[in-house]
Amino acid sequence: MVRFSRVGLRYPDPTRGGEGERETLRDLSFTLPQGSFTWLTGPSGAGKSSLLRLMQLALRPTRGEVEVLGAPLSRARRADLPKLRRRIGAVFQEFRLLPYLTAFDNVALPLRLAGRAEASLRPDVSEMLRWVGLEDRADALPQQLSGGEQQRVAIARAVVTRPALLVADEPTGNLDAVQARRLLLLLAEMNRLGATVVVATHSQDLIAQHPGQVMRLEGGRMVALDPWPYAPVEEVMAEAEAPLAPSGAIDLEAPEPEAGWVEEVPEDEPGDDPQDGAPAPLSPDFTPDFTADLGRPEEELAPPPRPRRSIWPSARPETGGSNG
Ligand SMILES: Nc1ncnc2c1ncn2[C@@H]1O[C@H](COP(=O)(O)OP(=O)(O)OP(=O)(O)O)[C@@H](O)[C@H]1O
Image (cartoon, rainbow, N blue to C red; front, side, top):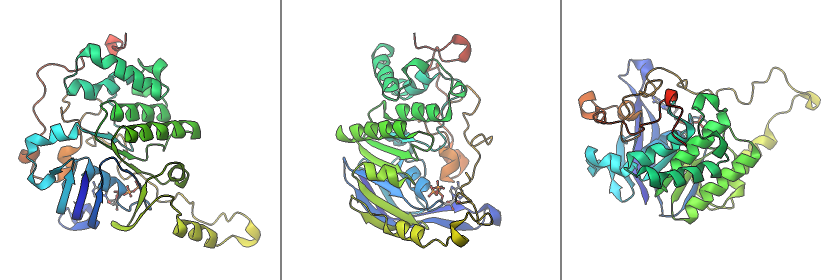
């Protein structure tokens, strides 16, 4: 279902004028069987998001072979990618909701892109919104929702197509414990229905709640692929051995534990997502940063032509949404 063979990934290094390259993922080889559930963990900067982006077919590896849904990426034609991607559900760290679409229309979008008839998609979208506890916010725009609510819309959008592969990057980052548990049940249900699920998380609590193999990355390498139940020995030890301030008092000089947890690209950075703040163009393949990520010549990676007709006819804010 997902096979990586000696995969390496390098991003251009901006500190060297883009000429040099630094290695983000190194020599990754593993197979995730169809219907498996995998937790992906590791310190900040280890390469988890990059690995998920390779699985989403939003990036090509610099070396090695990535095979997803039976298709080796090196042999896939560009024209085949949108179809393949529609079978992959993705929950991004930064949500990537379209700001001018209601919650309902954000969730409906992948179904509309896949050509589903309006009448048949409505029950599915409503059901997903109910699953994530947002049925009464269907007409709200993302800016009218809290961070956790936006995250839940993003989750509903990722699963509404019942994807064969579901990848989620820190999907509980903005959720309280009850919502996190509910999300986990949703992921488990998708998995039970046959989806291969991969979830990147720093939360050991979350990992402890659901069985799945645990892949651990460090410095771009896979250092462990453990069966569940998972005992994160090194993390427990590190915590136990961390020096205490004298007499256990709080050491105000100590660095914040979260220091360094800074998103590299601010969410609203212009150019981060070509769809930001603008109603068009929307790439039908639903991967806004595709061209930026692949680092290939522009002409080869130009976004597909703009659709001739709108696929979200009643979605503009002034229309008041389409969930009627
Ligand atoms: N577009 C990019 N261009 C250049 N370097 C990048 C890019 N995206 C990520 N990196 C680098 O790749 C490395 C891995 O980043 P990645 O986001 O995959 O890590 P992560 O394990 O998901 O981190 P976190 O837990 O903080 O989300 C980091 O050193 C980061 O600086």
